[in-house]
Length: 226
Image (cartoon, rainbow, N blue to C red; front, side, top):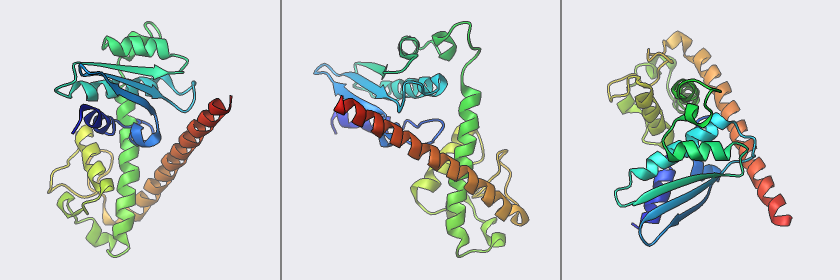
């Protein structure tokens, strides 16, 4: 596999923190260029120049971190394009200065708490989709006895496990298949209520994802016609 192919694969593992979708699938990777010497140059472009700076920073920093793990990448440059805080974010990402380094005096600390908040929302939504599919042929009483090892081998279930691992929640094969935000199992009598909440969160994430794609497509069409 070429370095370019592996770079794109690495970028496919970088998720929009709000939507929990890969930046490659969302169309945020404008270009990925590899020099003959093995230097990796990536340009990111978000749906609008006004996308939230904290999310923009996380995606740029995560993309650079993922690419730097490639053993034969000599150097890595990730550039955020056409964003109103691009200069600040690009400079901070290049020197690993953190979000507060991008905007000194305007913010405090890193974005770990914000990332975790949206990871919990994503986990709830994805667990809800897996649960709803299984509930069609399984009672709530039976469903709450399932373990992680019993989940179907599909992307939604694998992503749930990955999110639980990142959040420090139980995620081993013998852990409950479905858990609340604190890692505790969902009681059978609360399952349907929990599922309704999960579906509402999932609908919100899907709507936001669709809006981002539409905005990016409209922006591309307008610029092509200009």
